[in-house]
Image 1 (cartoon, rainbow, N blue to C red):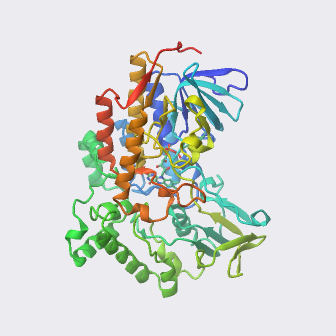
Image 2 (spheres, rainbow, N blue to C red):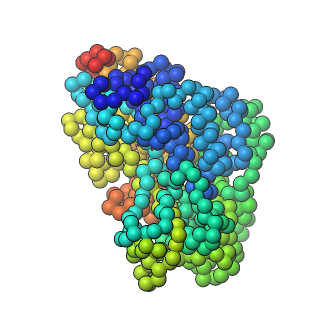
Image 3 (cartoon, rainbow, N blue to C red):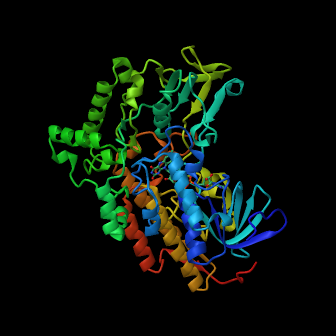
Length: 546
Ligand SMILES: Cc1cc2nc3c(=O)[nH]c(=O)nc-3n(C[C@H](O)[C@H](O)[C@H](O)COP(=O)(O)OP(=O)(O)OC[C@H]3O[C@@H](n4cnc5c(N)ncnc54)[C@H](O)[C@@H]3O)c2cc1C
C-alpha cells in the first residue's frame, strides 16, 4: 500500500488507524496481520511510540510496574524482552515499542509525519473520508482512533513569553538531543506527574532550579528496583492466568488490590499498612493495595493524607518549604510516585515558588516575573504543564458524523460514548481508551478494547452489513452509570486533568468509568455474547469498493 500517497488520488482502506502508540500499534497488528484487512495508520510523529516518542524529558518513566505495562498478546514477545527495572525509563519503553513494530512488520503500514485533520462520515457511501495535512484523501470503512489520553499538550502562553532569550521546552515535546542543564538557571512550571519526574532528575545537574508550584502533590516513592524474579517465574508458570488476573482486577496494575476497608482498622493499624506501602513503593499501590476505600472513605483518605503530610515534614528540613509542599486536598487524583522528590527541596540550589499565592504574571527576556514583582532569572524554562487530557486530540480533528453532526458539538458540554469506545452518530468509529472509558493501567485495556473492536468489525462483515453504531439509549445509560460511580468516589472533589479542571474553559465533568477493569471486562464480554445488542447494524447500501 502506498503510504506516501499525495493529493488527488484516494487511498481506499478497510480500516484507517490514527496513532501508533501502544493502542494503535496493537490495532494495526490485530486488524492487518491477524484479520487480513487493508489497514493504514496515520501518525503525526516521525516514529512509533506515541507517549514514549514525545516525552523524552529527563526522568520520564512509567509508573505502572512494567510487567503489566506491556503487551500480553504474544507470550514469546513477553519473555524475549528483558526490562532493566520495574519502572523503566522512556528510552527503554520506546525501544520496546520499536521492537514490537519491527517484529510484527508494522512500520510499512504507517504514514509517519502525517496529521489527520478531518474525518467525515459520508452517508452516501458509508465510508469515513479522512483528510491529512499532506493533502491525502482516505476512504475507510472503519476508523480506529488511538490518539492518546495524555497526548494533546497543554502549553500556556504567558505575556511576554516570546521575548525570552533562553530556551523553552515542554516535557511532552522534548527535543531528541539531550539538553545540557549543567550550571544553568532552570525554571520548571508545574508539579504534576511529569513535573515531579523532571524536577527530581535535573535538580542534581542544574546550577539553580526554581520550581513554580500551583498545586502541591501527594508523592510517594516508587522504590524502583529490578523486577522480582519470583513474579516472572509465576507469570511463566501461568501466563494466561496472570493476564486474566491483571484484567480482572480493579486497576489492571498487576498487583492484588486490598479487600480491607481502612475504616475497619484503628489509626495505628492503618499507619502500619501505609508505612509498609511507602517502603514498597508505587502510587497506585499506595492507593489501592493498602485499603479498598481510600477513594471513597473520608476517614481512610484522611489517614493517608496525614501519613504523607507527616512524611513531607520528616523529609523536608525547612518547615516553611515543607508547609508549601503540603497539599490540603483529598488524596483523590491519579496517584503519583517518584523516588527522591521531596528530598530535592533540601538542596541549596533548589527554590520552591508558591505560584498559587504569587502567580506567574509574565515571562521577561531573562526570566519569570511573579505577582509579588520578583523576576526569577532563568536560562531555561521547562513547561511541565501537562495535557488537555482524554478529549484533547479527538477534538483537534474536525470529526463529522451522521447528519453533519460535529463531534465538538456533540461533546460540547461533556464527552458522550458507549463503553468509552463508540459514539452514537459516528458509526464504525472506535475511540481507544477514549472518554468514559476505564480508569486503569492502559496497555492491557488497549488490547481488550482492540479485540472488542475487531470482534465488532468481524460481526459487521459476517452480517454483510456496512455499519455498526451504539444505540443512543445505550450511550445515555452508560454515561449516567459512569457518573453514578464517579459520584460515589472522592475524585470529583479535587481539581485535576481527570475531570478537566486543569484546562481553562474546558467542561469540568466526569471523564471516566471508575467501576474497575474487571467489571469493564465483564461488560465487554456480555456485549459480545448478546450479539452486540446495544449497537445497531446499518444495511448493505454500496459495495466495499468506492
Ligand atoms: C510521561 C508519561 C508517563 C506515563 N506512564 C504511564 C504508566 O505508567 N501507566 C499507564 O497506564 N499510563 C501511563 N501514561 C499514559 C500513556 O499515555 C499510556 O499508557 C499509553 O502510552 C497511551 O498509548 P496510546 O496509544 O493510547 O496513545 P499515545 O501513546 O498518546 O499515542 C497517540 C499517538 O497518536 C498521535 N496522534 C494524535 N492525534 C493525531 C492525528 N490527528 N493525526 C496523526 N497522529 C495523531 C499522537 O501524536 C501520538 O503519537 C503515561 C503518560 C505520560 C505522558
